[in-house]
Image: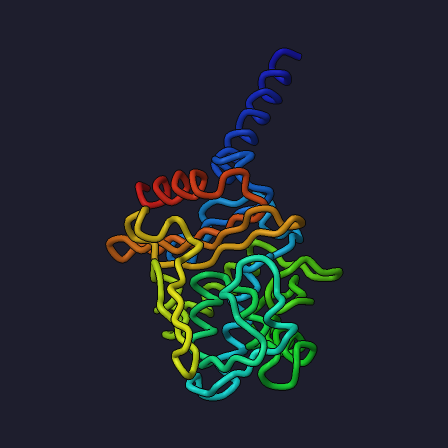
Length: 261
């Protein structure tokens, strides 16, 4: 009897140890995933459906890159100009280069810039349909988009694992990778009547050595989301956090520990 109890206790301890190794940061986020050079290291609820918030803008950026030259002018609609949340401050009737709107969307998470780009060719509905067409091509089989900018919407969801796949694809595009690692960017309207300096929403940029992106997100339904990529000595650590309790301190701890292994 005592032997059986001892074996059961050892089995429970072994299980607890394995879980701790798999999730060494309990309570840090509702879901998270850490990849080192593409291989999973730690995770918690990586396949749980969560609202992506502005992490969806990475998929929007990939669609935008297929919509014609980035030097093309985009006329801002009243709807786009009225977008809430993080904004570039667009005004209805203005014309902005697509590359300027893309920069504002990725660096400053500007929702008005995102909305203007989504309306550029075919309208918002067609744009979202293209986002959803791309998702399975990237292996994102548990993701559905309903808003190009990541606002909470019925039926919209993704997972930490799917968003890691999205970030990996997005960072292969030179235009995206160059923007998401910048601490700030200056953008101007076509006539240069307006010039705006946009600062990154990613507090890890310039504050955690090696971080080169990728994207932040926050809505009431999602909480605080983050995708961070850190590169040191050729070692690439990709972190996705959804519903993070304190995403900056949490991300700092996770990235530092992953690089120290």
